[in-house]
Image 1 (cartoon, rainbow, N blue to C red):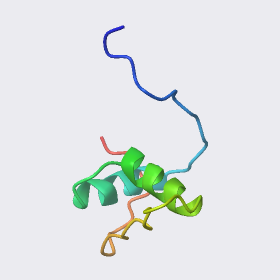
Image 2 (image 1 turned 180 degrees about the horizontal axis):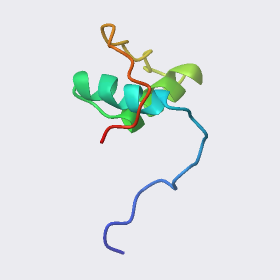
Image 3 (image 1 turned 45 degrees about the horizontal axis):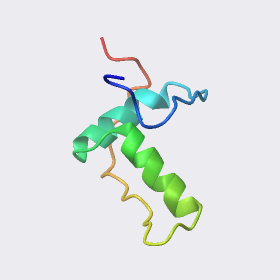
Length: 66
């Protein structure tokens, strides 16, 4: 099957911080999904997992980008 993701999509409710999280992840050269997966691995104490590094402080917009 072409373009079939390896993992199923999951849904969670997150407020407007989602957009600031996106900007912070991009500023570190990554994406939200990678940061979340890394955090989950660390939280579950998977061997070799490390807590994701936090970005430098960013201005919080709280708004969806146009």
